[in-house]
Image (cartoon, rainbow, N blue to C red; front, side, top):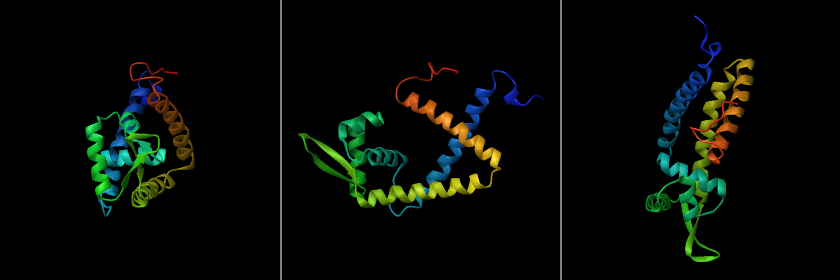
Length: 164
């Protein structure tokens, strides 16, 4: 039997399936990290926190756009995160009609703890791989990241991703 990576046309499908399997497994592991927290946040709330954390501070409208989520849903998530002390709403400096969102110190610590747990899990798994496999993984992930980033930036989409 010919290995899947040597059969023309199957490489990308097999790779996509493998990445999907890894993502699903990581989802399970990440859920464990979220649930072990003193004040757990849902996957959607955590995603919101990541976006706000990367931005430093963000207007509600911009957050809705980045999450591609309706304002009422984002408002409810913000309410919950504010209630557990992870998010704060501040007056927007140049508009009295908008608010700026920022993670609190507790929210930043929560995100940092989850990222550290994830990194520890990944470090353990990766260090048990051979040097050649680690090198191949790094190269492959760099390429995957570049393509996904281009897709996220709107340069391409599932129907328009180039095979190059």
